[in-house]
Length: 485
Image 1 (spheres, helix red, strand yellow):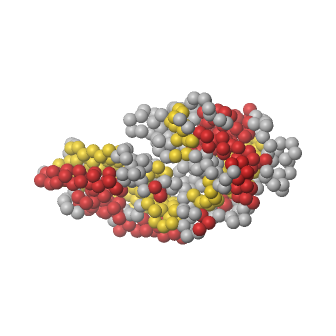
Image 2 (cartoon, one colour; image 1 turned 90 degrees about the horizontal axis):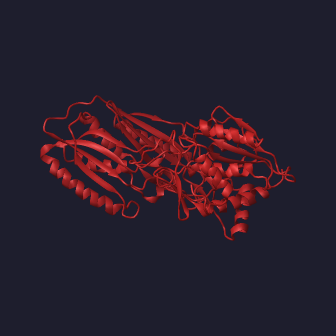
Image 3 (cartoon, helix red, strand yellow; image 1 turned 180 degrees about the vertical axis):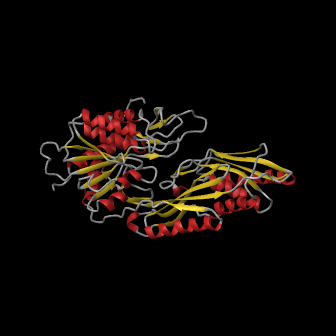
């Protein structure tokens, strides 16, 4: 990473070190070891719990001992995604970042700024000796990207502070005061593959180059979903012809909008040219429909060798269920204080085929828990009707806005003083660990803010460099003006 013009230098130095350390979700051992070594080097109290959450405590600077204790919090794991033609091992290799104008990017992979930049900001605070602040706890949670299991496993009493600043937001100038809750649905179709009927022609339909994005924060941007697009075409062909599915594979991550995918189908020889013509019409319609959000879509149709197929009933039910399931925005928030915020959504994220089953993974989100339950039941019912086995996670709770938050008031006043404009105070449709903290630590006064990130959870992830300095200045001013106990 070129350090030219990267300020604050201490933050970007830490980020560079962090990106040398592999830290996929559920494999945070190396970053935890780094944090423990960091605490020891700087003679700071450090504690690690059974879920690999880390807390490093730093005493107040002289004259600030009577201030309320502030918790700074981020997560140590990262989403691991790469371009299909890039050779990269997330369990061994260091992220290769580079500067492109005002943006910091990675070469063909996710950047890890979600939430490595939050971790870097905390470490920069901890190693500094020229910052005025009261007692600090820097908390680094594990496994946030897969259902927030680190925060979920944190026991009451691990954090001891009065106020919490979450550094896992992606829009500088916005202060988040609530978040959505979420659950996941896993549906499995089981079968024994069989030979295709005689006289069938095998076709592979593939799609790549979609924009994708975060299934919470980007769900309102009308970006194409590779699974839904491929399903749409196969469903239309099934309505006309005896189409058998041999394989359907798309998506990698439960919390990302799938950007590419492939489906192998078998059709009667006499209709293969009809299917080809339908595909060309479908491509034109899809490109027109998503001409703003997905300008680099690449559709491919090619013949492939014959292979075993799913039984006819499973082929039909699978595609019918994927066609029927809701996807995207389902409702918007009614609370005007939260602005133009998505309330409830669903995203089908992964379809994976083996010799004996097809597995579908979808995520549902809402900041109204009763509506989240209803949406989960709707998705479950669709797959139950199709004959699939359905499992759903307990998920994580929403974080409700506190209209009397002292920390929100302080954070807003600090921002106005520093930058001469009002920040946007709003909720976020992604899941934040603040929801879980609010159930375990109901006394905590919380806000979330961070530098600007775009296209997180994809290889196009990028960090807007100047906003890191703005967040740093904002954070230090907030810490300096935290009220007394």
